Length: 364
Image (tube, rainbow, N blue to C red; front, side):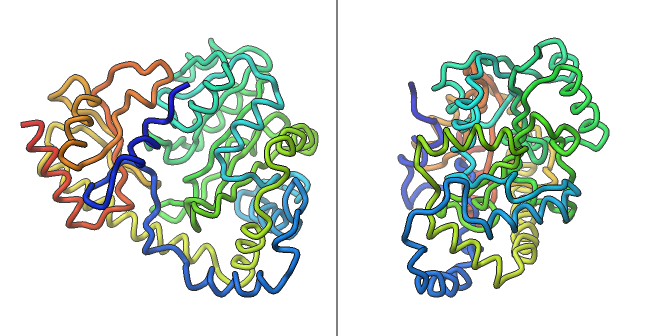
């Protein structure tokens, strides 16, 4: 079992590295003052340091459920929410609860999910088109997909595509894991309806506070029907009993006292500016890097038309203290690729420009 390439990169970089590698939110946008205020209130409650329910504290699950009902038009109760230690844990507990042997993923796909799937020795197949997907899927297979601002491709499914996707799920009678880590980071402010809303009985919709509040708190969730929640709850209890009580109460109190959507819109506005600046730099200094400007999320993804292997470029760039992620690691079979992913949320404009110019110099 190999470590995640991105985690290894994050361990290797230092304060001198210009990093476009990890999906790191911008630290300057963390609601630090609000969380500090909330923490003082939480510390007054002795239960914040005590064991708590494996499924998660009631009031936080209630808030998340209300969000689904109000904003996703996806009727949900708190009993259909399970709090996880980051959304990364969700992959592990879902697959263990299903004892899944066959898994189908988008190509390319999120490296964190691929790592979780591989360690469980799951048979993985990939799809690029709906036609391929329909031909591959068999009853009770598991399919994993990111429907909004996909990591790494930045693709977002249209309303028509979501309906077509859901029709395939119904036809094949499979289990569906829908990852919504980036769904709220929309540059146009629209909240798109999840595919799971059209396929409720065998779907798991994953969310996280990592991208919209702070990743260090490691609080995510799964939305699924009660029967599925009961199955994954038993697996959750075998791993960590429950997600940090204090961190759950901290986020719960923060949500009570602040408008999180105002905070999210502020972040998305900032990220859009950063994305456009990086895109402008790429068009100027890397004219052979072909990409489309994303409509949300945290990444720019594209292909180098003047090199064959982005992994070699990534290794050379790291020697010059510039980090990005070659697409090879986003394919379950690690196929060679000239594609690459760049994070635009965690570097200031000066470093972004310097990093892109250094890459251009290396390629030249």
